[in-house]
Picture 1: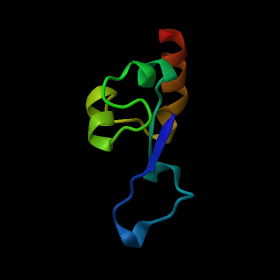
Picture 2: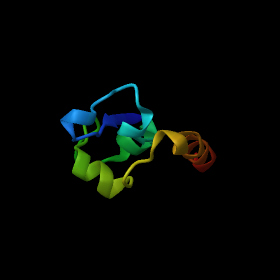
Picture 3: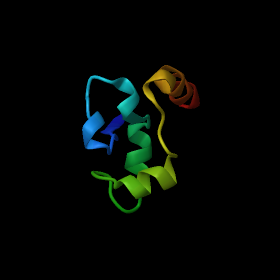
Length: 70
């Protein structure tokens, strides 16, 4: 799983607010099969290859989906 503190408004920054985070759930198999880099991935590539990520409230469903996909 990868996560990003995504809030851009400096006046609202609060890392304890889960709605300010985005999460990407992916398997190590996905990273191992990447042609470009197995050790890193940029945000643009992550969004293109995996999708826009999910909020905290959707995280459990996304983890379950990834487990069932394996």
